[in-house]
Length: 205
Image (cartoon, rainbow, N blue to C red; front, side, top):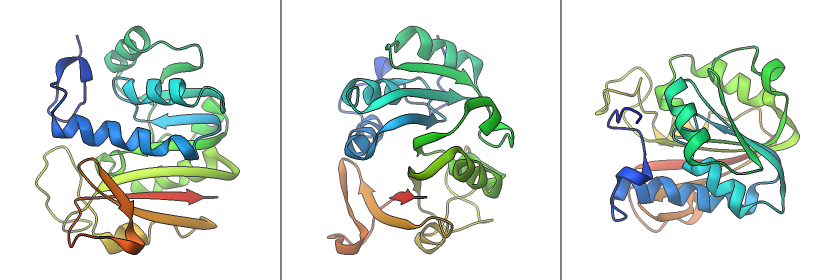
């Protein structure tokens, strides 16, 4: 068994009505139409999301690699979520040699990762370097009080504001922003609610 840190999603151990589980699963299903080619799932955790993409996108992808820094979690994913198109590796998302280790990708998924990363700029540089020209990044993060300010989670370095989130992806040629609240994901440009706890971007290199 892998340790439940309070943030880790392990579907096998959770009720199907768990809001956190629903929220995480929704992001992977939302991503399906945008995924193609060679795919990287950054901080894949227990591997359920990598598995969703492998199964749902099998006609459109070459392979998907799920990476995580925790060896126990990678071992769990390899056993629990095997698929012929997927593999799992131990890696640090801030390692500046990642492109040498993993190669380059057409699609990178990064859900609820960046708020855990102290070296945010290095992480974003790695993502950009790992993407092929024309490649797509799909990234999510919770909103909060902003960089350098305390947030409610002991697991997060900080939580960016909506404005800080929108400014993160200046190097990309195009970007579309979305808001998420539970199972609802809708374009930021025509949001129907006054407050959303999470942001998602689809950014193309």
